[in-house]
Length: 250
Image (cartoon, rainbow, N blue to C red; front, side, top):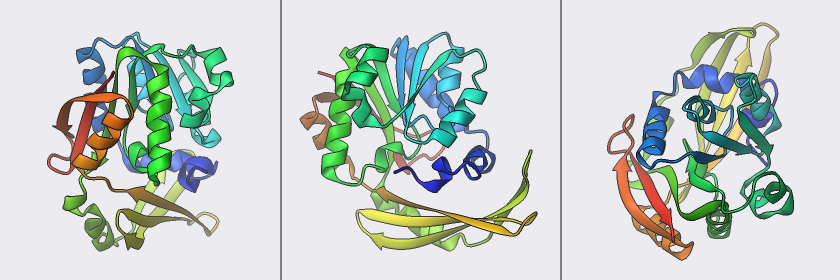
């Protein structure tokens, strides 16, 4: 089940507001150009913050996400309907419904931006996701994703950041957000966002858990899943804090 932040119709509009301009996504658009990718699959596309810019470059883009509320926002950013928005998760990509809409082995590139690669908590779920993406890629197609480096212990910074943040969200009004780290049992880290709506006094929460994998673990999983690692880069917005993997379907 997707986190409430993405699935709750009242919380989903807050994701873009609190996340800002997402300048980090320009790196994915640049990599798509570097790889000459014309057909792109955005796994965990959320509110379409990456899928829409990819389509702006004239690419054929399919965005897949399990949260209806986020997909509704994504569609509102794409009034011309250039992106194909698909409700589901990675498992859907190996099923007949997805294959009917979009042929398998059809994509030049699959991307998982933000924390998407870390939401697969078990080895089985991660391996299944890699297999499903592998089936969607053409031979020689590429998978690009980022993952936080566990040795940088990002959760310690999150735990120290206790000050609330208040934004005046268009169409909603003022909203206060607080972040709380709720559990650290490596390689899993859980945290909670709390949102207070002063206009009506409502308080809504969203709980999330991420899996922190080191570089060797990720590279081994990619090899086992039928990929060859071509490059491991730094995320331009968080240098030294994340790995950006560029892998080729073998």
